[in-house]
Amino acid sequence: MNFIKEFVEYLELEKNDSKYTIQNYQLDLESFLKYCEDNHIDYLKISYIQARGYLNYLYNEKSAKASSVSRKISCLRSFYRFLANHNIENYSFHLLKLPKKGKRLPKYLEYNEIEEIFEIPDLTSPLGQRNALILEMLYATGMRVGELVSIRVADINHTQRTIKILGKGNKERIVYYNPITEKRLKLYLENGRGHLNQKNSEYLFLNSLGGPLTTRGVEFILNEIMKKSALTKHLTPHMLRHSFATHLLNEGCDLLSVQELLGHESLSATNIYTHVTNDRIKDVYLKTHPRARK
Image (tube, rainbow, N blue to C red):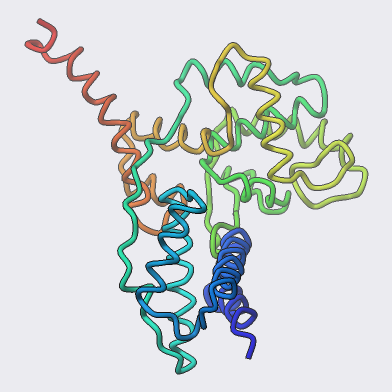
């Protein structure tokens, strides 16, 4: 039985994991099996000591980061749980203690920085209209870049100003956009997209050849926009997603609503933004409390 193939199919069909997750897990498994082969280890019967040896190998010889090691061990735990369902039980990797990952605060743009980069695209050209809409959509909805490039024109409800998107694990959710985004969307649909759509595509965002825009293409566009600004930050799609969440919380939006809008399964994933907004709260306190002002 080809357990790797069966496991990948299990991730695709039963767990509905994203292509990115499945690809990483497959690479992690192949790397682990190569290690076992090189060290004459039967991966089906690997001992706790041998599992510890693999952990040390990742740290010392591969110089892997804590986050990378955690993902690889999590992958192996999932793989051995899958094997247990086929009556092959081995819990060596479950006994390992995962490395602690340092919490990184999300990088986001300040309000004035948002305004600066949004002024850069040329609204008189098809590509400029598209690029302006990309910025607006990412910031207005907080969607992931993969969700952005998957939008079809038919997914947009202009009356309600909503978009149906397909998120992680093939889960659908509705996101909302504002009147400013609506203005950019209307300009692009009535003008720029018609010039770009040489292949009668159903997708909203198109490249210069008329095909669907890719995540890599969006990253390149944002990088080029940043080069034209006076800012020193490295602009990424996820930074706009972080800015969306941070600014909503700064303006008083509750955490559960932000969780829903971001498409997070658990509140713990959204909690990281409270570290950022706490700085904002402290600043407000120092500026507004009578004794703090003194």
